[in-house]
Length: 296
Image 1 (cartoon, rainbow, N blue to C red):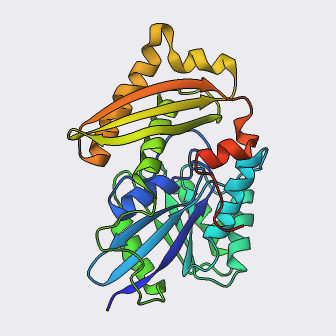
Image 2 (image 1 turned 90 degrees about the vertical axis):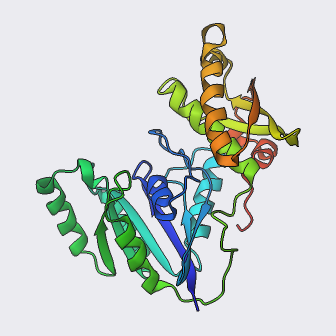
């Protein structure tokens, strides 16, 4: 009989939560970029083996909400850390543990749930800087275990996954054996496009990027996908388009390559850019993009 359960992954923006989730389930389902607030929604990553099914719940990074989207992201974190078997706090070992992170860890420790801390990016962290940070964690009561990992180099990831199994409390399979996420293909395609925009535009575009899938149809042995990239300001549109359309073409090429790997099929991708001012405060647009809480 398999042990089953849910483990919430929480932490600051850019701590490496999504990278660690992808490493834990050995599949890329959560997008990654250097920009804060890349993850906007709770996304489940499912690991099933001979003796367990672990449902990891990746969450947005801690943030101060400034709009309706931010409110939604905060609710996503709260909902994801309710009724779970364990909370996994991810801390950037390279940047060190801030007072804000200490406060968050202490908050979760008061919930009386198993609390595991994963120190990430240890491949680029110096030991003499890491040891004092670990000492900070020793002073916090309620932490069950601390693991040092490098998700990019897959160091310590298997050991962390194995250790987390001891906190699973269920025996019911929540997903089929070959499921890797709770999200639909449309969601993953939209997120893949958004990732490529964030990576291609680097620091030129702030957080106000959204992606709406207008069409996703299986036709004649391939996927025909039509999507609109939403920006908040008219000045952002030419940045995404680029000179003579060079930027949007580059985004399309990289997005199509990744989507083909995701869907394991040929893809025809058409991208548009549309200005929707202050869309992050529009309930209609948020709902259209899938940012709708199932549980408030």
